[in-house]
Length: 318
Image 1 (cartoon, rainbow, N blue to C red):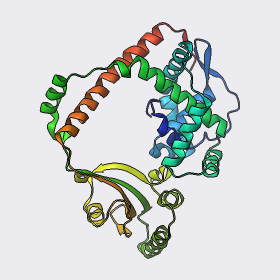
Image 2 (cartoon, rainbow, N blue to C red):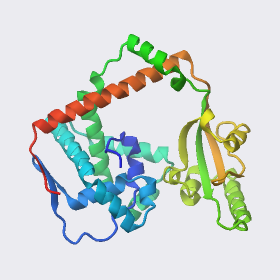
Image 3 (spheres, rainbow, N blue to C red):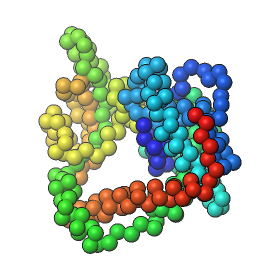
Image 4 (spheres, rainbow, N blue to C red):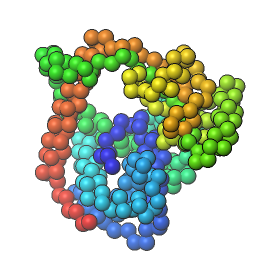
């Protein structure tokens, strides 16, 4: 379970998580944070939203066991979020309806979703559009106060970058990368099912070549967790890809889609979204600066939250 620290564009991913299984017969307060409270149902709903793909795939009983073990740490994470929201609002920071609307439009564009598709996805998971807007607005507000009080105060010197490159050059360099999307089918238990899957994949490929959206078809058919984001796997270094992927990608130009191919995992159709060349020295320096900034951010952020906690009234009732 990760802490609730997301750039607002990624909110769409967590908003499509599995809803809490079973009705909560009696809600209760599990924490008081200054003037705000956190309820048991809020805690568990957020744990469901933030769960990894492997946790979501568990049975309701197994998932509840994992959540029970994570109650304490996750509640501490929610307390931090409450404190950050309070800090932002006390300092007069706000997020307008127009900013939330623009963020939603950005998310819809990124994942090729229409309004009805977004609403239907949210409805299936038990969330209204208004709940989604509220959560998105809170994420933007948290990002804004963290940027102001922590991230924008970080300075990394050129000498620090040079030293970091000397000690981490191998990790910083790479031979280029591919930005890939995929439609994936798991290896069938019966060997006779392989031909059926190949026929199905061939039909999907025909739809793509006839102009259907790859991301929409990935959401509809793919059996990979990336289906929620239209099959987007992001950038993957060339030296981290299996030989089957390399062979398929070597025949593609950006925007093109491969024929279905098998790996030990199953059957894949991949789209090459973008290809990057090996990093230049400037790119290596930028990456080093970024990694140093992230490390400093973690230290400074933890210290900032510690100060917020020291000035707050917090009562945990788990």
